[in-house]
Image 1: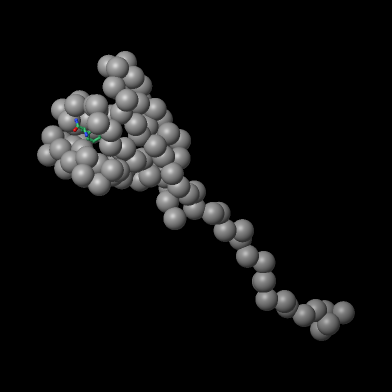
Image 2: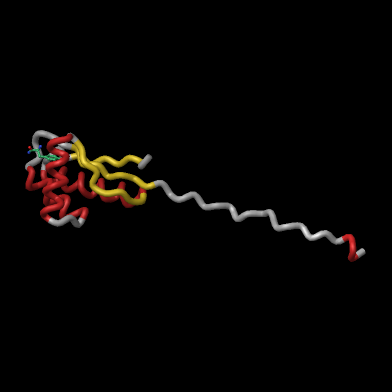
Length: 102
Ligand code: TYC
């Protein structure tokens, strides 16, 4: 019967898509890579200005590490590899690592 029809409130919810985790690219200090080379890599791979590159390089030089950029995992890994490859080609031990943001 039509009178028995009860209208139920819609209780289904759209499954929420998890926001993809962001990753940090981290510049690691060493005793051998020239300062100018570090700045060149930061400018070439991470599109930094001379001034920002200098500041990031000096932060890693003084503190041991410096976060270069925070971005999607695949981009972080590609950029870190590009930067490390440039250093390897030039014979420097310069390291960039990636890690998930908290
Ligand atoms: N410590 C290096 C030097 O004195 C310069 C340098 C800075 C190297 C930052 C790596 O991530 C780095 N020549």
